[in-house]
Length: 257
Image 1: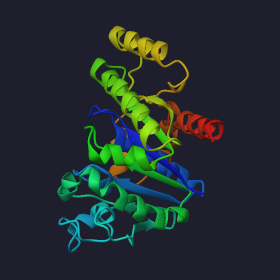
Image 2 (image 1 turned 135 degrees about the vertical axis):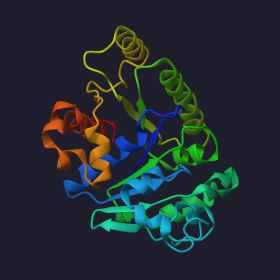
Image 3 (image 1 turned 45 degrees about the horizontal axis):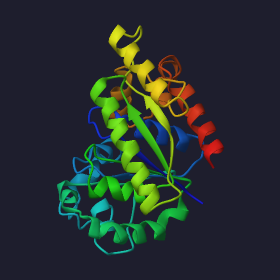
Image 4 (image 1 turned 180 degrees about the vertical axis):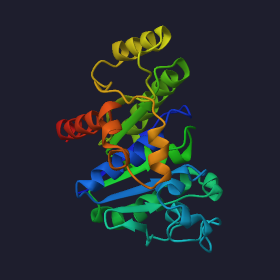
């Protein structure tokens, strides 16, 4: 049975995509089969994992079977693009912005047809609330919130928690937030950042991950080479908190199972 995890915040620029890519790739190196679904019309996740997809015939129009738009079209048989044996991806294009709530069940049917082929399915959500984010929350059994220790980012967390409660009540009783990971942390933390982190931990004491992800250019450099941070620079994966985060993620999954 696959675990479907949406990576979310209703504030952009918090590093959701980089967390999604590195988390999934690290798990794939442990032998887990991972499917990545790009729910952002900008296709940042798709570009990071399979940049060649965007140039394929029919991809920009959403007619290619490896474009996630295909899953919203009522055609059940999507064909995820194989990056390697353990990493498959459904990219996106600007056409995805036209999705409405009416397309939600078509997507759910398409996902049902392929989900049992994977251990983990990661959905990289757009920052805005709407049909795409609602669909992601409606089909996921876990949610991971990525946040900075910064005011607008924390407001985005609050909005996600409100939306999650509504989706859980009305559409998806299995939906659980696995936690909130603080990303792009500075070391040492400026006073304002430390205070915002304290506020976040006080407000969500059981949800905020103990381990933070620290800011480093090595993350973007790793993605550019097509590698996970743990492959590209094992030392930085350790020093900047990523290994500890992955361990805590897996522990929280077991507890929430």
